[in-house]
Amino acid sequence: MADEEEESKASKYHIGDVLLAPAYGNLEKPFTGQVEKIYENALLVEITENDPADQPTVNEMNHRAIVRMDEIEVIQQAPVLEPEKTDDNIEE
Image (cartoon, rainbow, N blue to C red):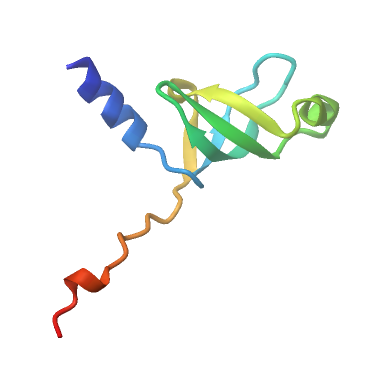
């Protein structure tokens, strides 16, 4: 049952989703970022927009942050690509 809950939580997020994350650590203001990698309960995010006061911290973090899934809000979903058709599926 726990596996089903984790799968449904992870399937809510896709690489490329744009999200709003709350301030944490040395960041004083919320920031916007794009999902680069999905973990069990967290996401690796490239920080794309942040408060100017947080810029030195964002630079130190190499514009990356790990955020908990239950603390973010998706503001733009990435397009979901359809599986590519292979030649095996084509009738001649």
